[in-house]
Image 1: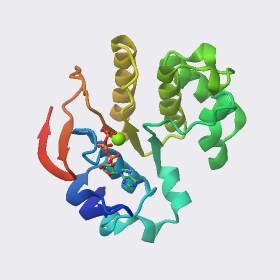
Image 2: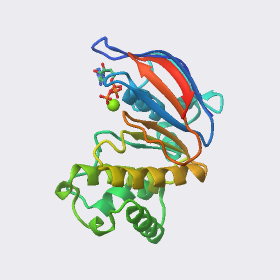
Image 3: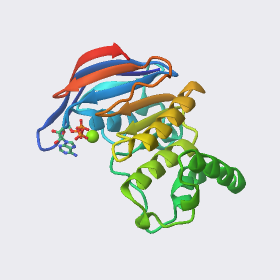
Length: 219
Ligand SMILES: Nc1ncnc2c1ncn2[C@@H]1O[C@H](COP(=O)(O)OP(=O)(O)OP(=O)(O)O)[C@@H](O)[C@H]1O
Ligand SMILES: [Mg+2]
């Protein structure tokens, strides 16, 4: 469904973050993107989301270049990104933050509220719903970022180190929830340093090293 074809990303400071990356991600896949700090994981997710453009190569969706078939805002209705650095609006409440993408999509308030309740409950955040984001811990913010990405019901979910700031039990709760979302058909692409072996079905894994894929396997 998504194909990364000969993608090279050289940033303005002439750092090469990705070199000739080729990868196919099928609908419903769960893909781990691993590799050392600076390997290019976030860059790969940003290119798929359309935050950055490749220097050369293409990102295809159903065999056609993504941004030639949809304007960016339409692409963003299919794909959500839980950013490594949260990208939350600090002086707004958790509820306002997590429902923003659904609001943009034009969903009804009552539908958004019940979805927000269910997702925040699953991520152990229900009592924080009306708290301002600036008053929350790093691990809480990280889960809010994941909740925001989920509430929009994306076809494709991009997660950048979603468990990096979480204790083991909370990380496991989050992973089980993400696995359940994947099992319902959402494609998940997750960058992480520490992936967990769970009882879920086998997942694909790639390892990046200095912008190149050096391993493709199943875990
Ligand atoms: N906006 C940018 N401008 C210039 N260089 C960048 C930019 N973003 C990332 N880089 C560089 O590109 C390379 C890949 O960075 P990237 O953020 O993709 O790595 P990462 O694998 O996500 O690392 P981490 O595990 O630390 O999050 C690094 O050398 C980084 O310094
Ligand atoms: Mg990163």
